[in-house]
Length: 637
Image 1 (cartoon, one colour):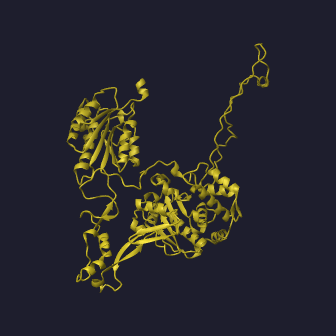
Image 2 (cartoon, one colour):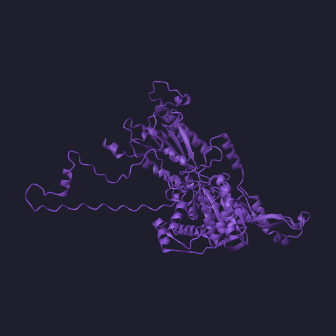
Image 3 (tube, rainbow, N blue to C red):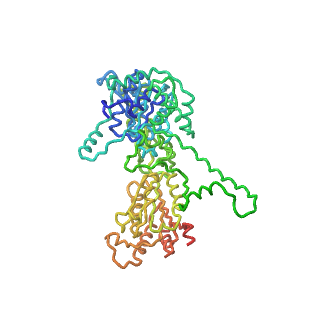
């Protein structure tokens, strides 16, 4: 979309113009926006805001891994104003540096906060956005700063519809205006791919659009005229808003957003009052449709009147006369609905020009791919003696000399430098660091528990294995455990004679769900699956720093391994195969008794043949043995 093609009738341009006119809509979320679309929308929205507010607007790009110090501000050491020559006497001076979202708290200009990918925000950034997106007052209390101000922030975020399930609904609900990016032309040629890669390398535009000529004159005139309009909301428009949103969500943000968008539409149309047509135009702009009316239950057929006559022939009626006129033709079939006029197959189907084909609120139906308690730290049952790992999320007072944060320690000591120099004369301006100044990193705890599942897909036909596995999946979710699945005998395996594994940081990883829905295959390399599980447990618990302190090993199999371990190595099966695969599996199962901090559990699917094999496998493992109930159809057979 170039500047020469920008018109006020384009859905994206009109949506951004409505957000610039209405302060309550200046929290815009773009669905499926590419880098090129965001590169165009950012300076466009910035210029529109300057036109409607007559205030300078500064663009701030919010990094996905932003921390609290980056967002709110932090203390930064610098040399004293006396210069470097007197650094020995004056030393370092700690100065407050404003954060990305607080740089205009003492100014009157606006900040346009751009979030390129909402689904990748860090925990600190998401928490800060929830606090500031819809807040009339912001508070800052950190590093001797105590202030309250009215945030002058405008927001423009992008998110793919497929990743909406990864974003907290509290964060999504605060974006008032939902728009859809225009469809992108598919790229097939190498030149197109090279041009796209070059565009991705460029950073987001940090423009200071003080020149109002960046917008076409038609859009600038429309915004200036609409900005001076004062109008009222009719009762018909209010009823129309409630008709689009009959089921109230948590709060009234959606109703208010639709009403404000309708008011902006009326301003652009130079109308004196918001009517129902403006509500329809606003709903069409964001892709909102009227809910279908509930079907009324069919009325019961009237009871036939009793025949007072005693003769066997029923009384004549009109429908008999109608049937007599049909002759020998059969009685026509009655249909429940009218098919309507015939459709010409050669005529192309026409669709309404709507910028959105899906609901503006996909989070209502999107599958949850996030942790329900994402704003809390996971409960920690085990404490490792190894050096802390995980992403840095802040600092805290140190209780040991491990994982020290040097710069925060120096900053803490610099706060008390003058006081300590007064007590100790003759120190020549040296910085004194006391044990109470030591700071260490606060890190996001890494997974200390693991759920390892060996799944034999050839034994899952007649048992309720999902219900039996559900408690273990719930345990992995509650304890924030990492998950690994050893796939044995599934149809889509790269080599049916070998097992393969699927790993994820949590139970919410999409590939874990895909692995649980795989179809059964023909071969059952059970011995190779047990060997792969043994190597994973050994690597997780005995190698390196051994972060995994406890593993729950769940096995669902009928024990009938028809692929020997040698065949899995060589890729060829030497016929005939008797009990080689079963004996290899039992021999490998006995090796698991040497491992510590592992709880093996065998779930028996009750196979119709060789029903003793799961119990033998559980005995070799030293595992807990449980029986999986059969499905009702299998029990009847």
